[in-house]
Length: 622
Image 1 (cartoon, helix red, strand yellow):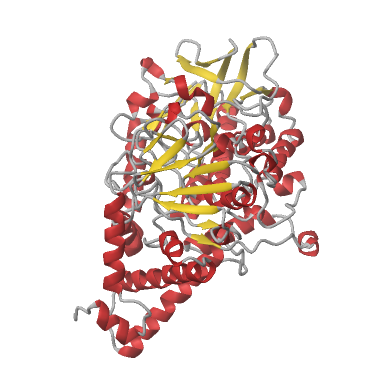
Image 2 (spheres, rainbow, N blue to C red):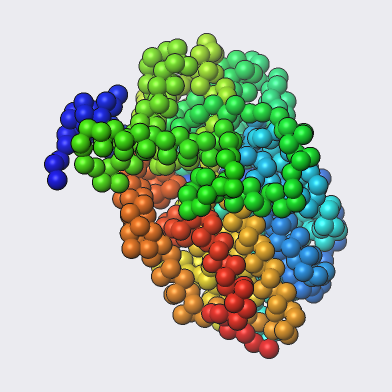
């Protein structure tokens, strides 16, 4: 087969770019950032404990210590915890206890109340239990305030608030083999014993990540993480109007999803804003719209689950949506990529150019990213700033972001982009942020440094030990690799269930697969209660089998050329969460431990397992 040069392909296919040149640029940009993004992160304890605290100073818990025995303890009152509790309620499980660190329900959406925070999957698919609670979001993409209000609505609808210990942190989880009970201890001296334990994900992957920049502790002014936004410092609320920054110089460290959303309100409010960038984000206009009330009232029962399925089918493939889903987001993006793939394939056929499917995908990907980069040239007036903001990596290397005002904010005279060209911030002093050898005097620092998700040392960062049968800890059991059954149950940990990205069919709409995990967990617990099962855990062989399923699903044999293409593709990506900061071969990287067949395939596996009804792979003790 003829090997075409980039110049030949550009001429033969009428491409507006030279593929060889794009590949060189991607490789050069990756090399600048390789091994620099995996700095040590600072633990939010000791000098840095303040970064983890609730900045709003909400009412602490006053309830006396609780000692009780219940059927199920759920750790976390984010959407995962609330949905699994709601499903347990539907199964008739009444003796529940939910334990939540925040002073209200909502999980990450209790903490993530920074200005302009919003969902990036359309709310009609993202928010769980819309039909059950009779609620329709006000807009296609809603802000954090409305999202948390829905969490409160779920808690009220399923009568969960009276069973929830708020402002309470779990400090230890211990399996009592003799009693066949989990013993849950908290920082308020609660001792709750339960037959079943559910860890609802956020504790393990939703904790904010604080960078390990030298000198952070010396800064004299206010500093906080976006996940603990301090409105006492900035004024305003999630909708902006940060009036207390009118005379302040603000340094924003990071340009990931949270930073993309917060740049515009900071730029409008601060006297001076410096945005410190290590790697540019891929930012696309949101084009948000209000919900069509006539459309909502015309929806048939079962509409939300079908829409979730249609969304995944459109974004991940593997299915055909029941109707076109236009969301100005992930689905439309997938459609555009598919169209570009078709155009490249047709151009190649017309020109007599023989390309294999992976080459066509690569060229379509380049075409899409060229459009993204060209948009920046149109919006951002300063050529140097525009060039620095361009994401010089392939689509899919990093989670795409959407915002209608991020790019145009860099046209404001009070806003400056400080591009560290992959090196990151060098250090912080008493009054300044140092980058590229230059000191930038600031009054306030905001860390938009993301979350623990994807970190290969994930369970060294958890805030409480999980001790199973025989005294083995979860971290010890996973010392060399993650092992689960369906990402939900773990050998050595009877009656233990988890809702996380490990072993899950992670997709663009995490709460879809997460909600299906909740349905699955509630089914197993109800079945155990009905059959008189005292303890249940997966066999080691079942864990090994699921590990084999995961590996096969990510291989060319199991997932086809797309799976193999993605594996090689991630290895070439700029460092980030998806490729474990450039080390995609690390088996402890969380994104190396997901089901490669996508969300719909994962959900189908869970449904087939339940339909079989034989509790395959589980040891049952009566």
